[in-house]
Length: 214
Ligand code: AMP
Image 1 (cartoon, rainbow, N blue to C red):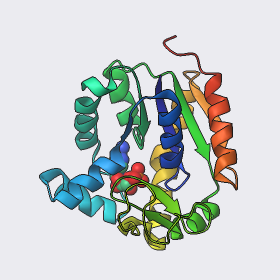
Image 2: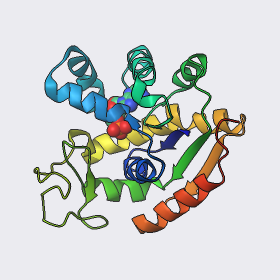
Image 3: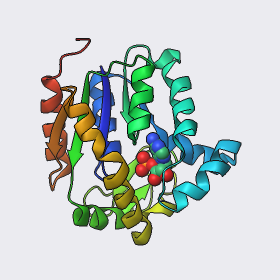
């Protein structure tokens, strides 16, 4: 299965990507995770991405497209993948088409802005990629990752002003992708629920109806 996860920052794409990986055994390619790793390693890509990310803006298309091209050509993606955080603009979607990706479905996770702001203020993440919420999805031990035992932290770009800017960016630049993929008959919409497990059940049920390799 080749799947795109669409949704506002904080809609729960990362959490759902982890559930889908576990069920379908295909890798997650999360551009945000790749950029954060580059940022903390201080690579050229990381230095370039930092100023955009910290301001709640998108990293330039050509940078992201090059990164995805390389990832999707790798062996790990040959049986399918879940794209989390890409594409985020129409030019990125067009570039993905030009790579001959032929995705099977685009799953849009719908969550209202105010709910997102509430969620992101409680988000805690780990370097290993795991993500928690102090109220909705707490780790077993406060501040410690269940998966690897490392200390959890608050992402730089989860500050409220940055979150509002990221939501603005989402509505202006990413939301038009719903029409783009809707017109291709690929869009599947799932409402985010109060309980993570309910959203997971709705996502997995929606994916049951997806035909792969049409
Ligand atoms: P995320 O973890 O997906 O919310 O991404 C965090 C930040 O990384 C975003 O706010 C952007 O600055 C940058 N980013 C991630 N994916 C993309 C993309 N596909 N295009 C442009 N910027 C991106």
